[in-house]
Every structure is written in C-alpha cells, then in structure tokens.
Image 1 (cartoon, one colour):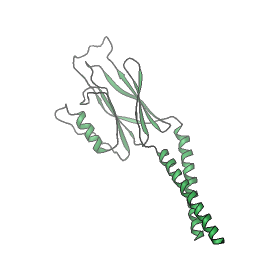
Image 2 (spheres, rainbow, N blue to C red; image 1 turned 60 degrees about the horizontal axis):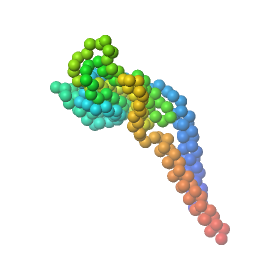
Image 3 (cartoon, helix red, strand yellow; image 1 turned 45 degrees about the horizontal axis):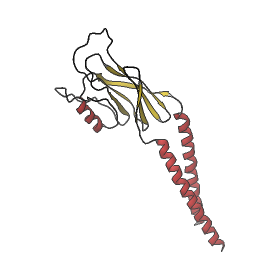
Image 4 (cartoon, rainbow, N blue to C red; image 1 turned 90 degrees about the vertical axis):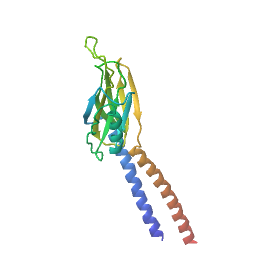
Length: 204
C-alpha cells in the first residue's frame, strides 16, 4: 500500500515539474513581441453595424450571426466568406456612422506579446480637398488570423490622432496551467501527510 502512495507521489511531482517548466517556457515566449500574419477578408463603407464595434469571432455560428447583421441592409443578402474556425478566427472592426464617403477603417498590424494579441486599428477621414458623396457610410474591415485563446486588445488611432484601447479578455493557457499547478500542489501535500500517517501507524 505504501508503495502505491509513493508511486502516486512521484507521478504528481512529475506533473508539477512539467507544469513549472511549461509556465516558464510560455512566459519567456510570451514576453517577446512577435508579428502575427493576417489576411483581410472584406472591407468597405456600408454595414449593418451602425455603432462603433470590435469583435473576435471564433465559431461558424458566431460568424453567420455577425455576417447576417452586417449584410442586413444589402439586397440580396450574400453568403459569409468561408473560414476554417478549427485553425483561424476573425477580427471585426466597425467604425460606426459617418456623414459622407471617404472615411475608412483599417488594420495596420497585428502582434502578440505577454499573452495578448494586439490589433492596431487606424481610422481615416477624407482629406479636405477630396470630393465626397453626401451619403451616410458605415466603414468596416474583417481580417482572419491564426486562432488563439489569448485576449485581444484593439489599439485604435482616431481620425484626430487620439489613441484608445478596447480589450476583449479570454481565458489564458498560462492561467490554466497555474491553476492546475496549485491543485496538484495541494494534492501532493495531502498525499504526503497521508503517507506519513500510514508510516506512523505501521511503525506502531
């Protein structure tokens, strides 16, 4: 019986070591800023989203819902672009209502750092000398990138140059590992005490 307990303790200790190593490795990698490749799926100036909105879409059901609202003003409705959500996700940025043509919203860069995906968004107004149409517009842009469980932070540069942030949190893999580490630590302590009690009873 004591052999069983000791064997279990060795296994738990091995898991603890693996957990510590995983956290250290992930932490060192996460602290390095790395560019993330992305592909613009669609962009334009007419959308059913008439308020400024930022979304991260990770399932086909969510994508269908977002696309249905986005294309609601369009007749006939179009089918949403095909995305492999087992590998990818979609960043959606809606600029909101603008009074004329000539406004746009774009994704300049996406990078990963410290367990976060950062998306650099730029809003643009029409130059003063540009002839614009007196039509209300709702600029938007969609981009696909590799799927991740990290939270997403939108770094938004407004038309006047001001910079704002919008954060969309997600459950972190590192947080999961740390939680598991704490649970395993408690299990090892409990198992160690049980072994000590059994050894004490055996001696008696």
